[in-house]
Amino acid sequence: MKNLKTLPLMILLSLLVINCKSEKKVQDFKAITDAYFDDKNALDPLSATQNGQSEYNDKLVFEMTDSYRKKQAAFYDKYENELAAIDTADLSAEEKNSYEIIKWEVSVGKDLLKYDTNLMPVQQFWGTNLTLGQFASGTSAQPFKTEKDYRNFLKRMDLFAVWMDSAMVYMKKGIDKGVVLPKALTTKVIPQFESMVTPNVEDNLFYSSLKLFPKEITPEQQDALKKDYTAVIKEKLEPQFKKMTAFLKDEYLPASRATSGIGSLPNGNEIYKVYVKQWTTTDKTPAEIHEIGLKEVARIKAEMEKVKEQVGFKGTINEFFEHVRTKPELMAFKKPEDVIANFERIHKTIMPNVDKLFSLQPKCPFQIKRTEAFREASASAEYNQGSADGSRPGTFYVPIPDVKKYNCYGDEDLFLHEAIPGHHFQISLQQENKELPDFRKYNWFGAYGEGWALYTESLGKELGLYKDPYQYFGMLGNEMHRAVRLVVDTGIHTKGWTREQAIKYSLDNEAESEEGITTEIERYMAIPGQALSYKMGQMKIMELRKKAQDKMKDKFNIKVFHQKVLESGVLPLALLEKKINNWIETGK
Image 1: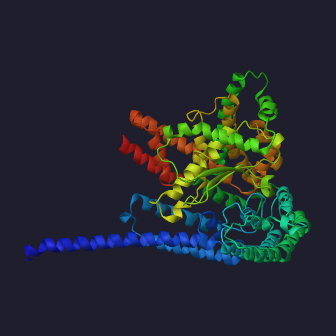
Image 2 (image 1 turned 180 degrees about the vertical axis):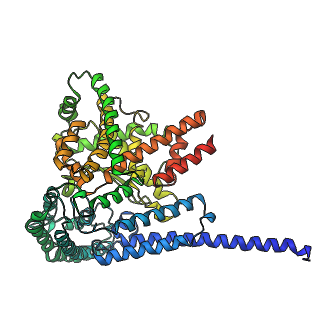
Image 3 (image 1 turned 90 degrees about the horizontal axis):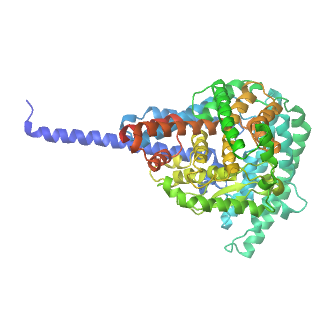
C-alpha cells in the first residue's frame, strides 16, 4: 500500500511533468511558426522586402526554374511533417488558427506544383520585372537610406539581368508545350521591357534612386554608386531588355495563343480549380461561382435602376451607363493634382465618423500618391502596405494616365476600399498585432483581404459619404464590377469565353469605360481566379454580420463585430466563419 503522505507530492510532480510537456509542445509550435516565416521569406525575398524584412533586400530568386520548384516542394514537405507531430489540443485558439493556415497553404502549394504554372513567368499585370521596376523608382518598399541599401539593390539589378535569361529559357519551354500567354497580353508586355532602354542612362528607371540621395551618402559614395549603377544598367540590364524585347516580338508573340482562358492549356481546367481554391479559400466549383455571379449581377442592376430613376434619367440602364461614363461634370479635373486633392477631401470627410464604427484602428501613417509613370498606363488603383514600425506609410496609388478622361463617379467608394477603412486598416492592424506570429502579420488571403475591402464600401453612408447619387451609383458600380468578375473570370477560364465576349458582357452591365474594362479583362486573363476573391469574401462577411445581428439582437455591437473580423488578420473564410460563430454564441 502506498504511503498516503507522498500522494500529494506525486500528483504535484505529475502535474509539473504534464505542464512541462505541454509548454514544450507550445514552444515547439512557436519554433515552427518562426521557421516557417523565415523559410517563406527566403523563397520570396521581394515580398520580404515589401514586408520590411530587410535581411533579404539584396536577394532575388529565379522562381520559374526547376531547382526553385524543388526548394518549394521541400518546404511543403518539411512543414507537412512538422505539423503532423503537433498535438493541437495543447494549442491556444490563435495557435490553432496558425496551425490551420500553414496546413492550408501547404496543401494548395503542393497542388499547384503538380502543374506547369512556371512556364509563363512574365505578364503585364504583376511579377518580378514589374516589382523590381517599382523598387527601382526609389519611392517604394526597397530602402535607399544608406550606402549599403544602394549596394543591396545593385546586387538585385545584377541578378535581374540573369533572371531575364531564365525567364526566356522557360518561356521557350512554354512555347514547346503550348503553355503561352494570349497574344493580347504579349502585346502589352513588349512595351514594358522596350521602355526600359533609354538613350541617356540618367533617364533609365533603374537610375531613379540616384536622384534621391539622402544627406547621409557622401559625395564620394555618390560618385562611386553612379559609376556602378551606370555600368550595370548599360552593360547588363539594357542588353537584356533589348534581348527580351526581341524575343517577345520575334519568337513569343507569333507563338502566343489566340484563346483567352487558361482552360485551353494542357491541364488548364485542373489548374484553374486550384487557383479558384487558392483565391476564394473555399471548395466552391467554378460553375457554382458563375451562377452566384449571375444572380448578383441581376440584384445589383435592380438597385442601379433605382438610382437612374432618382436622378431623372429617362433612357435604358445601358444608356445611363454611357451617360455616367461621359458626363462632363464627372470629368472636371484639370490636372492630376486635382484628383489627389479630391481623395484628400474624401479622407477628411470620413475621419470624424470612423470612431463610430471602429474601436480598433492602426497606428501606421497613410498617404495618397499618383501611380509611377512607367506602369501607370496598365495599372489599377491599389494599396501598398506600410512597414510594421510605421517608418514607411501605407500608400494608396492612383493611376491618372489622362486626367481629362478621369471620371470621379466611383472615387468615394474607391477610397473606402483601397484606403480607409479597407486595405489600410486591415493590413496595418494585422502587421501591428503583437499577438500574431510574424508569418501571419505579413500574410495574405485574397478572399478575406479583398472581401473585407469590398465590404467596407457598403459603410459609405455611415461614414458621411454617398450623399451625391452619382457617388452612391459609384458604389453600386464597383460592387457590380466585382459581381461581373465572378461571371467573366469563370467564363473566360472554363467556358471558352473570348476576350471580346468578356469585354462586351462587362460593358453591358457596368459603367466603366471600355478602356478600363479592357485592362481589367486582360488582368483576369493574366491571373486566373484572383478576381473571384473580392465578392466571395464580401458576401461571407456580410452574411456573418447579418447572422450576428439576427441572433444577438440588441447585444450586437458593430464596433465589436469589426474588431472580431479584423483582430486575427487574414484567415481562410472557413476559419473566419468559425471565429464569428463562436463570438455570436458567447455574446448571446
